[in-house]
Length: 276
View (tube, rainbow, N blue to C red):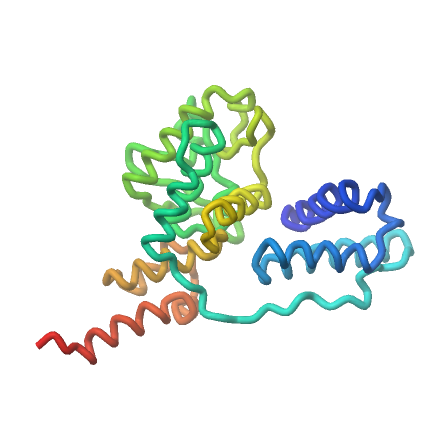
């Protein structure tokens, strides 16, 4: 439900008011939806644009039923999503992302921490946005930097704990020190907005990652880090079954999609070894 609400608010603030100059839902037509979708496709992945489109469609369908008004999306089709192999990051790309987050400003340290946590854990965007921080009450806080652990609430509210590396822990520690001076530091949400603004939503975090993408020329989006984490785990010899716990999977079927490229590389080295 929160994802649908965020999509509707973003459409209203990012397009209707700012670009189209429309102030009521009655003024929305199919062209508005098409232009907003084109904007999303130009800046984000096709999968993300499709998710936003479907969220808006649910809203306008609900509104048409409740208000007995025309549905501007009734004849529109969601953008096609081409299923392709998701590329993992190269060491050069990760280095460029790291450079794009350098600096001592609040935004820089927040960006560095977000990228570091995504790289170290591969957690879902919604899980990242849902991390809570209570510096005065460790029992309620999801962060334990000393143990290098983060408590995550996954799909269906199922909780699990993921480990992070030393680099991610350092990036989080730097961010937390900057966060302590934030006017909204009393809030439980870990990720806060710049200029003492309120906590970030999942959409806001996505846009931060996409901004780093544009700064350094690396095609970066949150879900790519999930693929990269899974690939790296398997490519370094991690057990496939053991990967299910940190990724929050309940079915081994997900291993087929996320681990295919790593399995192929390991099989090649084993079968086609020409070092002897």
